[in-house]
Picture 1 (cartoon, rainbow, N blue to C red):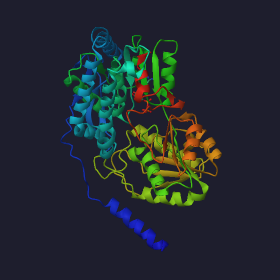
Picture 2: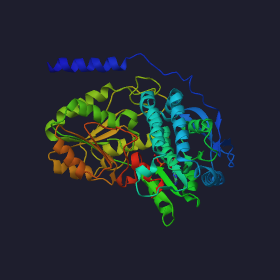
Picture 3: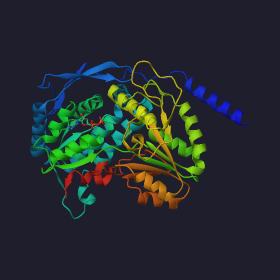
Picture 4: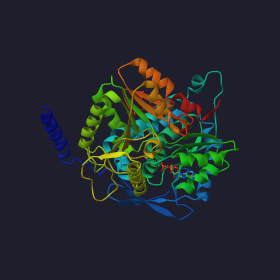
Length: 491
Ligand code: ADP
C-alpha cells in the first residue's frame, strides 16, 4: 500500500514537471532602449550623464539602460515636487484629486498585461504572480485610496487633516509596481507630492507608471520618479526640503535612514525585514497547512519580507508534515518566470543569489540538515532550488536572520507557550501564520505573538483596506487602510 502511494506521488511529480511550456508572450512589453528621469511631468536626461543596465535575471540579458540620478537630479525633483505642492496640489479640491487617482487605477488595469510581463522580465518573479497578484493589487490600492481622497474628515472625525508636503519614497525590488502603488496612492489622496525611487534592479514598472501618470495628465511635479542606487536614496533621505520619508527595504538601510533623519522634522514610516513563523498545530488541516507554508516561502522565491521563513510543527504531526512538505517541494516547477506553469522563478539578482547560497552553507556548517528539490534548473540566469532545513536550533543564523530566498527552517514544539516563546525569539516582528482547528488557539497566538500581521489558516493575503507593518526591527508605521492615510497627514 505504502509503495503504491509513493509511486502515485512520483507519477504526479513527473507529470507536473513534464508539462509543455506555456510562455506568456513578450510582444506586449514595450521596453525602450534607455529611460530618463521623470521630473516635473517630463522625461529628462540625468545631470550625472550616467546610466546603468537593468537585466533580466532569468537569462542575464540586458533589458534597458536606466538613468542614474545624482544629488543635483534629486534636488530638481524635490524642487518640482515643492512647487507642485504649494502652487497646485494643495489647492486642488479633494474631489479632483480623487479623479486623477481613479484615472491612474483604470490605466493600470488597461495596461495590466504589459505591466505584468515587464515586472516578470525585470524582476524574475513568475508571471502567474505578477499577473494575478502584483498588478491587480496595485490597481486596487489606487482605487481604494481614490475613494478616501474626498472623505478625509470622515476618516479622522473632529481632527483637521492636513497634508505633510513633499514625500520621499524609497522602495525595494520584490514588489516593484505594488510598492510604488502602496506609497503613491495614499500620498496623493492626502494631498502630498512625491519623489519616488525604485530599486536599482527593478526600475522598469515604476517608469511605466511614470508614463501612465503623464498620460493621466496629473499636474507636473506632483509625482516625480527618479532612478538610481543607494546614493540616490540617501540624497532623497538627506534633502532638507522633504517632509516625510516612506521606506521599504532592509533593516540595515532602515537603521541608516533612522539615524540620518534623527533630529529633523521629517516624519517616517519604515517597513523593514522579517523572519515570520508559520505554526502548525496537530489539529490543523494538514494538507491545507502544507500548501500555505509552500505559498508563504517558496512562491515568489521567498522574496517577500513577510515570507514564512520559519516553520514550527507540533511534535505529534512533525513526521507526516515533513513528508508532505518534501513531496510537495518535489512537485514545484523552477524555471522560466514567463512560463505560466512556473512556481518559482528567478532570484532577483546575482548578488541576492550569492546571499542565499551563503546562508545554505552557513545552515549546513551550523549542523542543520538540508533537503533540496531534485529539479533541474536553467544553466543561465539566477536560480535556487526550494530548500528546507531540519534539525535547526533557535540560535542558528538560518533561524534568526532574513535570507530573502526559498529557504525554510523547520523546528518542532510541544506546547502553545513554547511555540509563542520560540516564535517571538527573533529581532523581527512583521508577520506570522497559525494553522489550527481551534479558534481559542488562534486568539491566544494573535494576542501573544509580536507581529504586525498574523494570518490564521491562510498566508500572504493582502488587501488595500488592511494595514500592514511591523514591530521591533521590522520597522514602524503602517501602510494600507486608514492607518496608511494617517501616515501622510498632520492630524
Ligand atoms: P534590499 O536588501 O531589499 O535590496 P535595500 O535596503 O538595500 O534592500 O534597498 C531598498 C531600497 O533602498 C532600494 O531602492 C535601494 O536603492 C535603497 N537604498 C539603499 N541604500 C540606501 C541608503 N543608504 N539610503 C537610502 N536608500 C537606500
